[in-house]
Length: 115
Image (cartoon, rainbow, N blue to C red):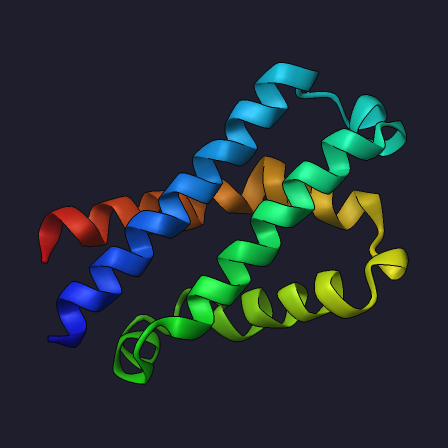
């Protein structure tokens, strides 16, 4: 039963990854624009917050079985966004959305197909 639940959560994570991609396409994949545009940053951070929230809903067995994904850090970054948003460095968020997010999305999509 957890397998279907986990797959459902992964599908939602993929949707938020895609929303970040859409937002980046809309505003332009440029760090300087991201750094100065509050709407761009806020939209991406809201999606990252949701991804962190969803990752916390994955079964513990799933997170343990797929420990190569930094689930704890994903959840931890969600907490920073939710509780200390003013301390979030734009460069860190940019690194996540421009480099690391595609790896998470690819993992989620691959797992949803294979299992």
